[in-house]
Length: 89
Image 1 (cartoon, rainbow, N blue to C red):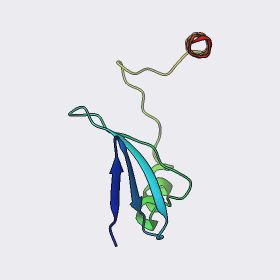
Image 2 (image 1 turned 135 degrees about the vertical axis):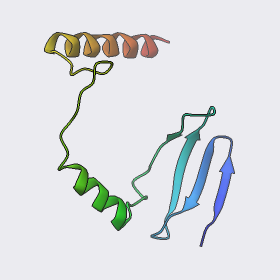
Image 3 (image 1 turned 180 degrees about the vertical axis):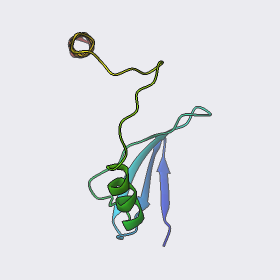
Image 4 (image 1 turned 90 degrees about the vertical axis):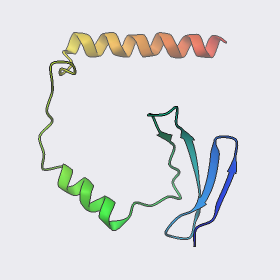
């Protein structure tokens, strides 16, 4: 049963468990943004993929290095400033 109902960027679909699930999608040609709700459940295949992923190490690259504690603190501070500006209006 595949029932889709869309309003603006929000789509409501019946998932594999028969629950109505809300997904928000954003796709400017290459990026997709989806918001999953608690009603949505992962399939056994997806759960298996997540379990398998636990066995792989995290690999950092030159253009995406591991954050130092100082970099992590700067990132956290920037997020706090952003959030306070949003809250201010």
